[in-house]
Amino acid sequence: MPDSAPPHRRFQFRLRTLLIVVTLLAVACAYFARPMKIARNRNAMLGQIRLVDQGDIIRYGHEEDGLNPPAENTSGFPVSWERRLFGDEAIAAIFLPLDTEKKHLADIHAMFPEARIAAFTATSPESVRRFIKWFDFANDAVTNR
View 1 (spheres, rainbow, N blue to C red):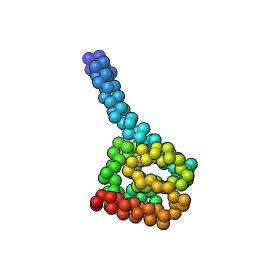
View 2 (view 1 turned 30 degrees about the vertical axis):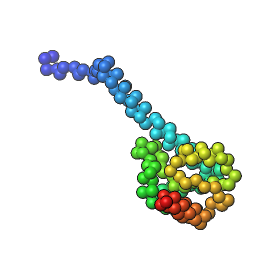
View 3 (view 1 turned 90 degrees about the vertical axis):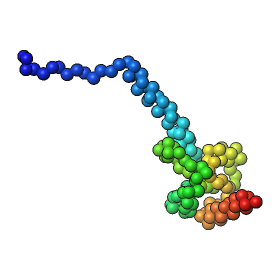
View 4 (view 1 turned 180 degrees about the vertical axis):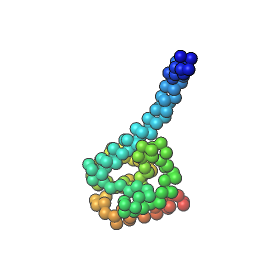
């Protein structure tokens, strides 16, 4: 019996250690809760714009949208890394039908402050390009006064 190894002790920790770990986890969860909610709400609104409102969306830096605004245009409204982690992205422009309610337009503008929002009868790629050029010209005229 003297040759037998001593029994292994199970992993033990103090109550104080448990409280510290739980507190750190709670702080981490609280830190990520707001960006996750914002990203979820924005993605739901984008889905509603596409399906229910029959609108069109142009995202920064996405060639499949038909127009590829450079990603550096988002410098005024960056999407934080926390929100990008949950699938959020900067939106360049949102095009909606003319009969969209003003309250709905205000809600969309509040949720997407970086986006240019316009109402059109048709959301063809050519009308989108004309709007972007007009909007850039209008912004330059206002800022160069």
